[in-house]
Length: 252
Image 1 (cartoon, one colour):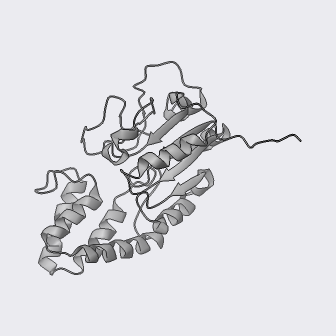
Image 2 (cartoon, one colour; image 1 turned 120 degrees about the vertical axis):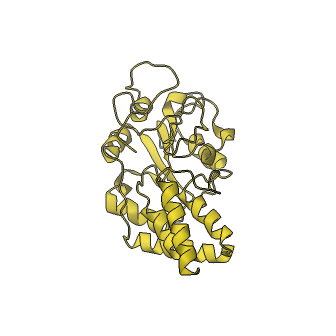
Image 3 (spheres, rainbow, N blue to C red; image 1 turned 180 degrees about the horizontal axis):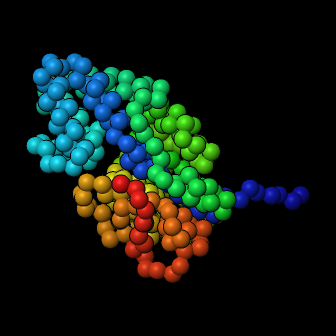
């Protein structure tokens, strides 16, 4: 009896959500709006102004270690005495609003077209996010991103949860573990990916929006676009260049 097996993907591209495929600060602002509901008006106004400054790239007291807007809101709220349980409720309520379409968010210019090309070459496109599915799926449906994705992993618990997720994805692929030009991950934050799995030459461009500068030399702001972008790397059409590949795009 002849046995046939379904081939795995020829490449794997892991995408982050907030700040990577979903641009715009309104989801963070919705979170802040829900948090300040439990605070006196003056305190809420102060927290909102501090968040605005942080998102605009200004130095804000007490937020220098915040890796993104969500952490900034949490630190500001904690300083005002908001209980963690209240933060959880506020976050869920903000995601319900985001799921319903509140706030302005968008995908980077050219992203869907680039992903479509990558998909045609047998590359798996996996969205991995710490966010719950609530809001993520609706955004992907609204923007057309769903049509390009192979799968979505929500509540990923990065950074600690990232290594096993990536290992599972790589184990099912047809490309060998040493074929670094057939693997990639695009995200906003280096630490959120955990250095422990950044081995074996995985391409790892990062959008360093606020200039944290905590990535290694293969980290550059950008997206997948262009003849030498990560998409071209994954499908084997990029020109020869050194391993510190750079993403170039208009993503801000």
